[in-house]
Image (cartoon, helix red, strand yellow):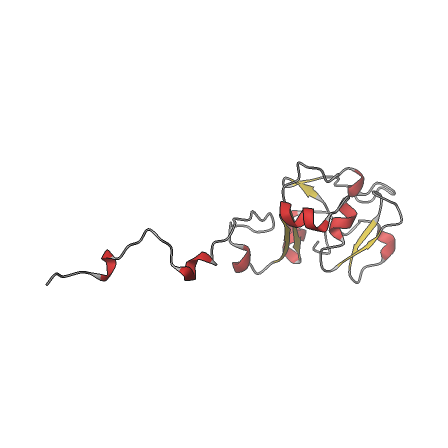
Length: 149
């Protein structure tokens, strides 16, 4: 007769219940401390390379159309479009929204007519993922987004 402890069981193979919980790390700009998206109280939309390819977006405007709570009026073509949060007047162009690239605001002064941030931003093969933070926290981290987008 031999004594065996429960901890001595083979630990090389992961249990089937843990396989489904493996998650990819996501960096979110709109939080003070790093945390998992699932544990965040912020409304966050994320697009990785696979989802960008699946959406087949050709411009920032097409990508922003996939974010809940934003209205896109794309009469300007690929760039120079009106992107407004739901409930704000459409005539504001992009006054209440801000685009960032690697944590830096693309174009800060939203008061210049016909100079929206999407004119200075292009989606390319170098864009690996996109994150959109909605709500009050986004207005803290970006000065030109008082609506919280």
